[in-house]
Image: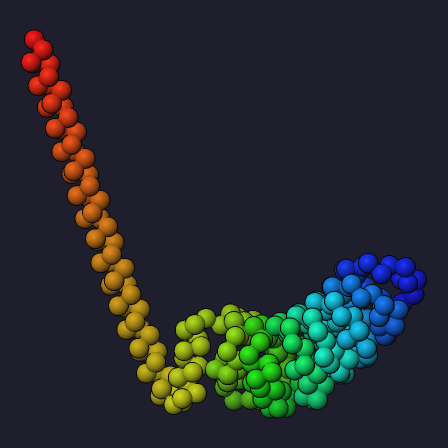
Length: 239
């Protein structure tokens, strides 16, 4: 990458589908916020942390084997690194030091070790990550109860792989963590009971509203009737 020396004010840069094999030539862009550099020839992200203003980084469809270059990045919030060659937990551990990171998409890599799941369950990640995508990695099928494990352990997670994480999912996963399948079944029954109570309360509230509206209509009719009677009385008196 050359000839960008004068463009120090760049905030967004699209470099998809070239033959870029390193970030040299970009590292002076200290105002760059969004970098889209998918479908290139990158093998690492060496010195990427020098892009201190970067909040969004898409490096999908490269040959990246480690994310170490992102260690201690101060502002990165969204990382998309789909279809690379990340294999071991050591290849992604640097993400734990990216204090603003909330969205991570590592789909279709080579991650297979249970340690990968444990890494995302660690406080450094579980207290921050809101969207996580790991589908297409061997670890998804290798770890028993993969989805329940992550949902129960990641406090802020609201999207995992290809589906959202609802409050109900979190309650069921927490129950499973407490007491296994039996506790999960019991919690499911409790949730059904709560939903029945909520539906009954909603129906009762609707009925109360209907009765109040009916009473209001009757009051209005009475007022109008009284007004008509009064007007009629005045007319009779005037004669």
